[in-house]
Amino acid sequence: MAQSRRVEKVAALIRKEMSELLSNGIRDQRVNTTMITITEVEVSGDLQHCKIFVSIYGNEIQKDEVFSGLEASQSFLKGELGRRLQMRRAPEVVFKLDRGMEKGISVLNLLEKLEAERNIKDKKLIEFQE
Image (spheres, rainbow, N blue to C red):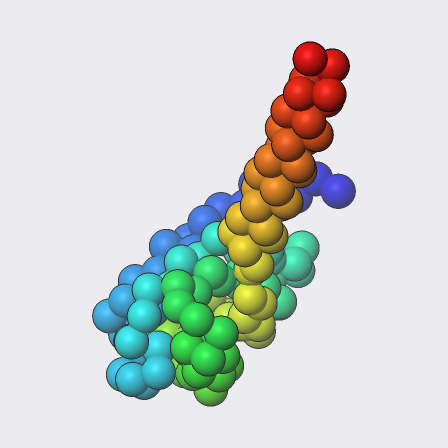
């Protein structure tokens, strides 16, 4: 479903402001310990709900800790977004962990493994024919 220009514009503004807030606005040490990247922002058509997809650098324990810090900061971030964007009602903010990079890396590893197995089979076939 196509989004209106207003929804797309609000999503871009939320992404910009949220990036600023995540790097400078949150005092929670759990959030400030590692690199967080906002990969996508989805805003509902009525501008009342906002899903923010984040990619967190680190191991699983660090990711869980940072993500819990983000969830604990949701109400603060909602208030700051409303103030910065000068919206009558700020959207409800929900963070989602984006595992796209991890999935991409695992697919690449599987492809490399399959290629290595294929090369071994081809090598054995050539040796058998000689």
